[in-house]
Image (cartoon, rainbow over all chains, first blue to last red; front, side, top):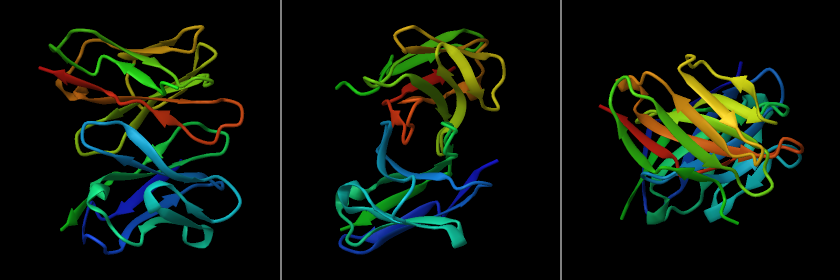
Length: 113
Length: 113
C-alpha cells in the first residue's frame, strides 16, 4: 500500500522568499509522483509530475520538484513566493499501472506581504 | 476543451436521503475516478470506472455506488446519507492507455443536514 506524508500542515513565507514543501512517500515499486494545488472552493490543478526520466521536474507557475529515490522524497520548491501562491498544496502518489491516487493531508501556504 | 465538468456545484440534502452527482470527463479520456475530500483533509479515493465497469474501489461502504455511461461520463450515487458524508466530491479523468496524470473537475460540495 502506498502512503504520502507531507511535513508541516501550514507554511508561512514572505513575498519573494523561498517556498519549500516537503513530501515523503512509501511505495513498494517506483511510483508516479504529483503535486496538485487547490484554491479555495475549487478543484485540484496539477502543478507538476514525475513519471520517468529526469528526476528534477519543472511545473507551472515557477514550481519545481526533485524525485530522490534514496530518500523517498519529492519536495516542492519555488525560489520566490508570490501572493498568488497562497493556496493548499497536495502531494500524491500512484503506481505506474494503477490509476488510484493516494494523497497527503495537504500543506496550506500563506504569503506575507 | 471544456476539461472535466461536474454538476451540480453545490447541494444540500437531509440525512437518509439519496444523492446523485455527475461528471463528464476531459475530451479523449475514458477513465473516471471519484474522490471524497472532507474539510481540511486530502482527497480519498472512492472508486474508478473504465469500460463501464468498476475497476478499483477504496475503503467506502456499499452506500456509495457509481455508473459509467458509453460516452464515458459517470455518476456517483450515495444512499442513506449521513452527516459525515458532507464533503467536496471530486471527479478525475484520465486515459487508461498511456496513463500519466489525472485531471480534476471543480467538485461538488455536498452538505448533509
